[in-house]
View 1 (cartoon, rainbow, N blue to C red):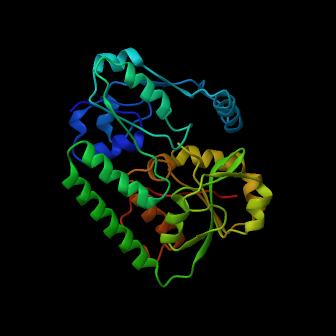
View 2 (cartoon, rainbow, N blue to C red):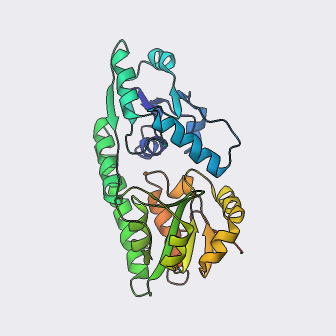
Length: 298
């Protein structure tokens, strides 16, 4: 099978299912596992490089309000690749080429491929999509093994923090304007022994104000700007250090959102383990230490 993945999380899942050798092209943002970096890229970003957080937000809004994607899809390259399957998503206009655009292009190809759209909003739906993708690529057994391993790790985290006092948490997905993380993130916080004071599980991330963040009185703020690694997240947190300081949280940490929180793939479980170590370092000391939070000293 010849597979084109137009979603970084799907690329990660395909490799985790053991069919990475069947992936013939990915997006310009697919950077995990490292093997994906060597594959042909069939998308590009329309936004110019070097924009600040508020400029990125404004540019994205301008394009989406016009009904345009922030990505270009290379139709001639897709025609040459002749895929049997294209994996896309419709969950977020900022995360990938729109599913409607992908289907329109697929229908124009000489041999229209199957198009599978993965659109999870909860952790359970993320794991269900592993099964969906496994079925589509003939790797159902591997999918069930991946789901079982994830479920075991989730149970291990919940058991580790079961007797610890709950910690109030504000997970910030963007800092200018401020967005409270939604979708699966509030669930991850709950499973890690926290209470998300801003986000709602299964709901879209919501734009809020700094006043609302302060009014929620979080003990811990987790800066997880969408698509950014830990160092860039730390830089963003220091840029808005005055606003974060006024919230009055006991701790502010920056995390690698791109790896562990933004993408609905297998590494969300790594993100859960990371959150548990942030909120309950003593109780979670025995959990795997994949990824590290970066403290923000205000």
